[in-house]
Image (cartoon, rainbow, N blue to C red; front, side, top):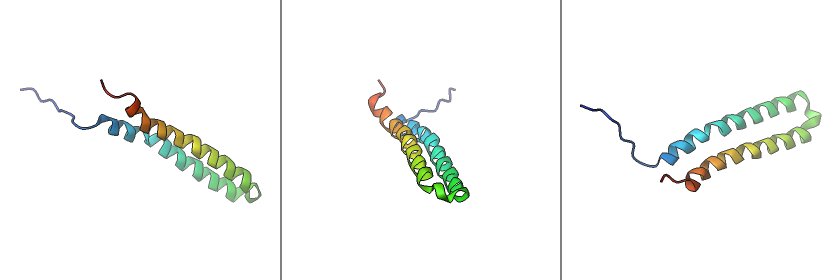
Length: 76
């Protein structure tokens, strides 16, 4: 008797879930380190905030690529 598990549903959802782990961790690191930097050097708030937002935008771009990729490359 063969025991095989059949996966049904959209596999792209699982792929996006895995692709969202990296950017989620990245955003946490960016803002955690940014708050720590502002606490250490409050006079550099503007520069630190600008770099935090730039890093956030680039990290979120990875999450959007992970969201769009299953639609661009559907299973054949």
